[in-house]
Length: 329
Image (cartoon, rainbow, N blue to C red; front, top):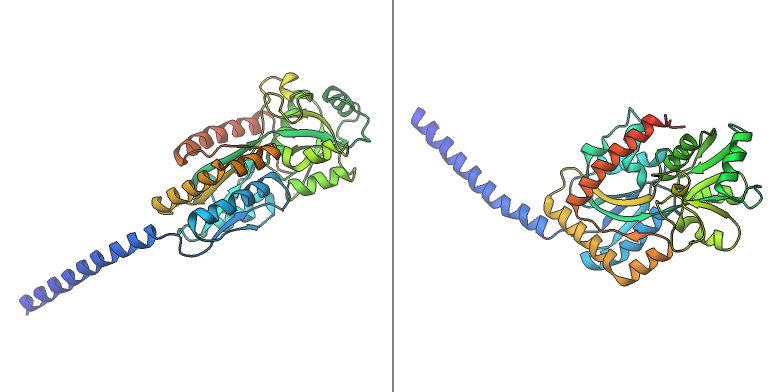
């Protein structure tokens, strides 16, 4: 009896081994054939901001490169954490990706009870763009320079508001850093994206905003908003006459940027294919020209370089939150 049982187990084991050998190539073939259906890019903000524009710009060349539709879906709310949470719990098959803004590198320092971990639950695929921000006011505000804005804020502490795309966004971090460096009290008003914040500034419901070039450059050129400074370390080509905040406060360099991510655990082959498609899209002359018109620069970093940069950036934002005592409003 024992000999029969042993032989039977051996036979079953051999059959299972053969099945696994047959299944393994099937899995490899499935990954090699990826994608076999449309890819969804979740954009965790409202339409109209620079990150939304970036995602939609690269979706078309990525569609052509991958041979499947790349569809952008807006999932705004809670400073990008609602859309990010959706991607964090998505299947690890490469069909659900995330294009996120600067909040991806700072939300971890502002929120303690997120249902996911930014560093653990996402794979950085590529940094797509970097975009300076414009510190803009409504033309009716009686200030013509950054110095005059600071003086107004000091004369009326706590009454001046600034709109942002949400807690942890580049606009939030820039406004809070300015308040800390200038010694002023200003109140953040958080929106579900950069577009709504700019619209409320346009309606004269805010004191100022740090907005991406793509969101407000046209309004600046039309005279509907007044630029006072830019958030990058140096002046920018579209507005060479406008000083950088760093000319008043050294080391001030807080820009908007966009990155592409997949859920952690996605097969490396899929990560590589998606990254190659994104970088190829960013390398096209048409996309680069459109991005430059929006005031953004294409980056297109490798997954490894993006991961290294993101780790350092998160550390810098954590320190800024600590020293400036930045809170999520």
